[in-house]
Image 1 (tube, one colour):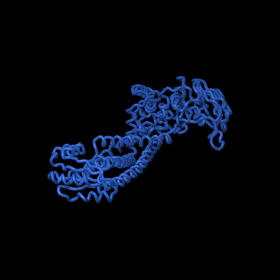
Image 2 (cartoon, chains in turn yellow, green):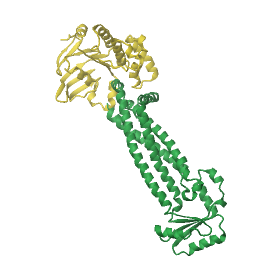
Image 3 (tube, helix red, strand yellow):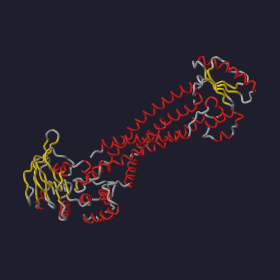
Image 4 (tube, chains in turn brown, yellow):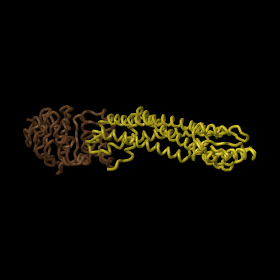
Length: 225
Length: 298
């Protein structure tokens, strides 16, 4: 599903965010990216979404070299990749349903599809009762569930999550991880950057550890360190 | 994937509403600049129409009284024909004058209805040998006050004054309108950049979920186009006022001799309106295209 071949990303001032990374992630895998702040986790995720372009190397997503995609094709790549933010990034002036519908509306989905898919995904994330609430009326965990619903409503092949539990308490984080696990069991590949030792140690999934841009560990059913 | 018109209109409306004050400032600036630009054209049309009768080297016109006797007419004709300083002349009789009047005032049939050929003054349109202003003035003066002559109107007294005035007014209109059009373009750009910044999070989400660049850009471009359209409507209103209240005032019957024809034909008014709309579209597309390509890149 995802393949990196000798990928290097360098920011201004010779700041190497990822150095000569080579790895593969299969369809349906759940992968934790761990490492200290500045180790390159977020860059790794942003490279998969073509928000960043590597200086060297090749990245394949669903069999396609995304480095050779024309700019006009990038949006179509992103329709196959859901993205979950640490700070949720919900639109405060839209209700829960409208926030989720927005993701379908802006890719031109017909109204009848939106009407069908939005309640279904909100039921999946356990927010059927909050459909008309605004983000300010929700708890942090509920807001992150909306963010996950928005990322998954288009049934993407891959879900990228950049520290999705970073702003949540441990108990709420467990609920979010259960939800991501459930989504993963539908066959969706999940790549999640995290600092949360407890979650990684509990779930025992594949762990890729980065240290100053270098992959120092790639362990099946791994732990945080 | 095609953008839904409902979505585009809704987003455009929201953008305009969120930036209401700046949007209004933009619309007014566009309106005033287009009004001046259109006014430049109308004024030039009016001057061209007013000076039409002076084409072909005619430098002065001897207007006869409609009641002038045939002897008085014969004396004037004799003076014209025997003058070595006159190269050519055209006699416009009352019927021809009436036809000319109808042509000039084709847009005001109510005026034509109250005028008959009998009240139209016949005239001699005179082409002198030497078109020098002093020579023409002296020659025209020879006919002034003679029996049967109503008045003598010389091109260098009237038309050149009108043309000088028109040139100055047009220059001011054109310069002012161009400066304001540049300001309007910058205002559209600023307005859209402000809207883009206000909607930073929405745009970020749109990009992440896979909205195409055009899907993101179009509502912002519509915003610029809507502002320009409203500005054009504002300008049309202003041009109508210029046509009816300013230019129309000069073409009243009491100013017939000096300013006859100082008016704008319907087709010229329509063309100017279309031109104003075209300029509005061009300004909005330039302003919004710069804004979205520079500040809304993927």
